[in-house]
Length: 85
Image (cartoon, rainbow, N blue to C red; front, side, top):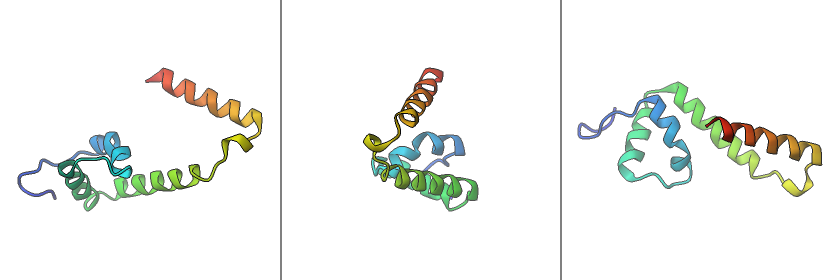
């Protein structure tokens, strides 16, 4: 539970702010709210852990060594995702 002067952070807001949190770019107030939420929500704990693992794995990929077809498939998937936003 956040400090009395901090409003609770719902799961949806955590999802929207988790990238900044993982990058260390979230302001202190929102970081405290997010961490208070994690102290109470196992689903969000799993979500953040999955994102951390994804970032870790993605950091090991060397795009210049990908098969061209895999590169094209990833580029197409990203373009489709970006267009849907």
